[in-house]
Length: 196
Image (cartoon, rainbow, N blue to C red; front, side, top):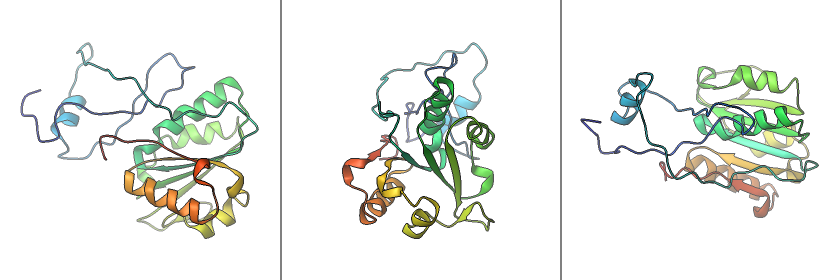
């Protein structure tokens, strides 16, 4: 596109749709006066072409469905979890799953209705953690802490943890989990190359 800013004309996206769904679903955060890329993307008309390449990734569910899972998502880093949870629902997978969904405000929570629906069909608890506005239980205020982990997920040390979001958040929660007793090999991190 014309008028390209310093961030360029390429982005990495995590697919939010499940392999069981017929349409590819991507999600992104759009802010006022954002990058030239997102401005152009949001102005596309039906039928305009874009180029997608470099299909890659290893942020996959385990094959053993007896594995208990813990997800921590930051902001739009929730997209792979939307994919995982839709896949569980559609295939009847029975992973016992807890999702901590971290956002600045309740209004920034994506897929809230979808997650509520999934929780009626699969073993799932969704715990929004809101940093910049007061909330009431069952939501949590601030950031995920060891105290919140112990209170909300007493078996957290036995779970396989998946982290997705901005690199500083992923690094901080990886450290938190390790210090709380979760072995490094039980922590799987999504890689956001566009933010690294």
